[in-house]
Structure formats: C-alpha cells, structure tokens
Length: 359
Image (cartoon, rainbow, N blue to C red; front, side, top):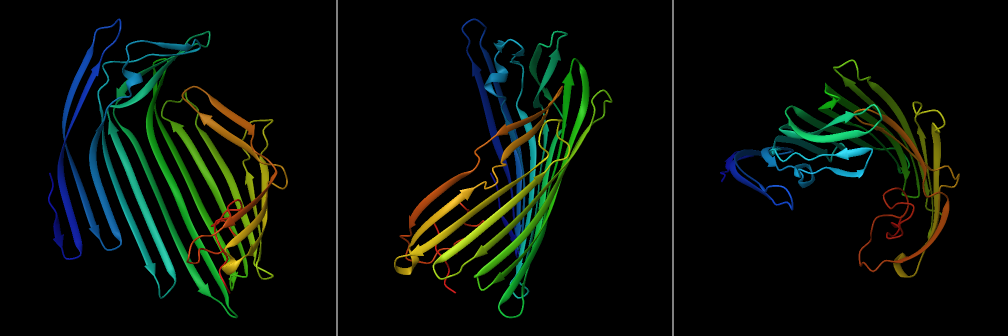
C-alpha cells in the first residue's frame, strides 16, 4: 500500500508492505516444526533530477539447512548443526545514486552509496576441539552492517590535430561489521576495503589508441577482542592497452596487465604479467566479416592467487589456471547498423562480434 506525491521535480513515494512467512518443517524422526511470522514493513523512494534514493525494510527467512535439527557429518572434521529456533532476519536497506553528464564540458561524474543493517541475522558459531574437529552451529544475532560506495569522474579533452585525451578517476569502498564466536570467545569484526583508480587515454581519429590505468586495493580486518589478530593487505594492478587500425581493414590490439601482491605467504608468487594480443582482418561488404587471431597470456605467467580469512584461520591459495593459447575466430555481422569499433577492452581480445568504425 503506497502513495506518490509530485512536488515540482521531486517524486516521493512512501509505502507500507505486509509480509508473511510460514515455515513448515517435517522430519522422519523428529517432531514437526511450524513457524509463522507477520511483518509490517515501510519503504520510501525519492526521485529528482540526477538523484535517486531508496529505503526499504524486508524480512529474510533462515536457510532451510540452518533450520534442520540434525547434524551434517559428511565431513567428520567439520560438523554442521542446525537450529530450528532461528527467526527471520530484519534488514533496513538504503541506496542513493547520483549521475550527471555535462555535454558542453564533456564531463561526467556519478556516485553511489548503499547500506544494510540487519537484526536477527544468522551467523555461525564455531567450536574447535583439541583434536582439530570443528563444530559449526547457526544462531541469530543483531548489529550486522554492510555498506558500499563508489564514485567516478571522467573528462574528455579535444587536443590539436584531431587528437583527443580523456582521464578518469574513481573509487570503490566497502565496510562490513559482523560478529564471530569461536570456542565461546566473542568479538566484533570489521572489514574495510578501498580501491581507488586512475586512468589516462589518448585517441587519434580512432586510428591509434593508447591507455594506462592504475588501481591499488587496500583491505583491513580488525577485531575488538585482542585474541584475534588483525590483518592488512595491499594489492596493486596496472593495465596498458594499445590499438592500431592500420592499414585499412586491419586492427592490431595489445593489452598488458600487471599484478603485485607483496603480502602473500612464502612460496606463492608476488607478481605476474598477463599479456594478451590479437590481430583482426575485416572484409566483405561494409566490413561485415571479421577474422581474428588472438593469443592469451603470451608470457605464460597467468596464475590465480586468493586469500581467505575465516573465524579461526587464514588460507593463501595459488592455482594454475588456463594459460597461453591461440584462438582463431570468424564472425559475420548480420546487423544493418554499425556496431562499436573493433579493438580494445570494450570488445574484448577474445570476442569478434563488432565491426570497425570508418574514419
């Protein structure tokens, strides 16, 4: 049930929602478990030029696996219990979005913020025995927060002799607060991540393009109980790209990505390059045919490295993923209108579904 007001350029829409949750569980050996919940939940939307705001409250029932009153001992070293007394989580969710494009100045910028605050959220308490056997059981807990934000700005500049330059900057940020309980030792946990980025690109008549991008990522986790050590990690990523559309009907492209993580465990590589390249030949009427030879990971260095932080352990993991290979593709464009130009990350080194823009 809702209403909508229009005040000048502003639209306001408050509403009230009724949500009913019925949980009916039947088991072969245990007594049935029936639960019924009714919630009256508000929501609000506000829209005005360049801005959007949303707020709502919703209820989320527990996962069926968390409700079962039997233990899952598929892995005898990690036993999972259920809790039929769990209740639905109530989450307050909000989002704010802003976007603006100044065509005269060739300037665009946007920002976005969202957040969730949950009560009766489901977390898992762990018990670790002296022999290393872990027992995990779910429970409801209040005060679980998660917030996300990003912002970007992009500016294009027309230079002399048909050259164009564009630069952009932005960031992504996350904040999460939760609770961990291991062997009855409780602690509030905070995770923060921040990833700024900056890029610079030059373009000459869509014949020659070059761009450079750099983006570090900072992560930190901390706990209010000193028994749990905090952790701080910084990663670096740099990317370069070159596209040449010469001679006529030919497109050459190359992308190089560099990854550096100085804080991995001993024995795991701290850095690696990934170099992809491709050559395209366009033919047939209106360049509708495209023959493309691509090579992925020219230096044969591609690896996958990840770090997992859980309640009672930190795990560094490195695996070999798909490395150097060559790919020959043919694509025929059946569209009657020109698609985006060939080459660059917007078309991807391993996609041949676009046609060249005529200079």
